Length: 435
Ligand code: NIG
Ligand code: FE
Image (cartoon, rainbow, N blue to C red; front, top):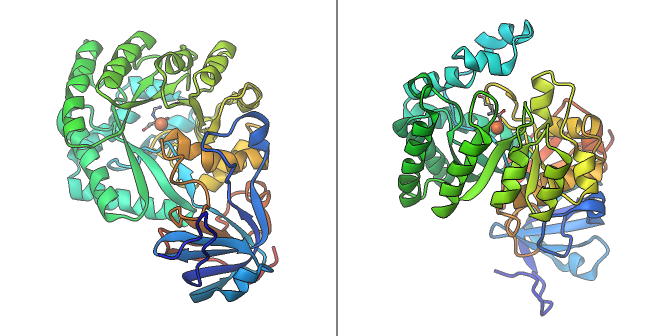
């Protein structure tokens, strides 16, 4: 493969050449850490740029006027007409694999019945558990593929996917095996998380600690079959307490898993502090995080994964305090939380709109949160979320003149073309260069 390297060798022939890029967000901050504080307000970019792709990788980054650029030959040219090009987006928190849907509970929600009340009555997550237990592995695979393809059409080329709609050994493993098959057969990169402690089904209502013992036991099988990298728990009123979450996550850490936690989503219980104390890779939701919790996240380098779509969909007036987090040097990432209950959407672009409007994140911060920091939230900060020579070619061309345009113009899909691992996967954009 001809790649530019430190000795200055340039490729002469590439598979795809993207030319006349108005803004190329490389998101390359020249270090390999998550981005924090003032740095989040900076978007590394090249204007009037060119990107060459060869053998699935970024082979060349340059500018139109460079002499080397003039000499490159390409099998396929894409004239970007002054538009925006970015890395493929990374979604670090999805519940991708589940049976059915929950529109039959939508009326209850609209009547004002709270999310946790629906769950306490055996609905919510537990409805999806019923449907997931009944579904075959093939049915789950086909349905997840549908959602995955829709995610790709919105520019998401790497995602995390959680189990958590089985709550028994058989179904949890079934969900994780579906993820494994998706990893093998689909182009989208998927990072797998075991969320066996997602809710308490009726058979464990009287003995949640017994259920956690079972889930800890399942972890050995998960490890042996390499079915997940991370372990997650829903630490919430009526689900698992901070103490239970601590015991469970500590056991998962001992077994060599990375940690994630649904923390302080609805009630502020202190899951944020727990994530920091255990050295979790990410703490997710964080609507009710305390000042101390936020400081602890920064001190322990835990990435905050914020899910404004969930607050929006649950009709909450309070939102995660992104500004306080950024001011306190917490690395902030964004995600859809795609799931059938609290956030049924595959549209990360809408989440970017919400992050700007509700979390008061500026466009530069939003872009760092869906690329570099999202990649770090799933331990992929060294391979995706940036456009760098030698890195996998996950690239999105947008029908937009600049990066501010995406969080600004809301509710529609701005994707023109998605390239995953050097293959053109989605072409849907408009031809013209005016917006
Ligand atoms: O992240 N909070 C727990 N889990 C999901 C919702 C899952 C569901 O409602 O099906 C969440 O909000
Ligand atoms: Fe979630």
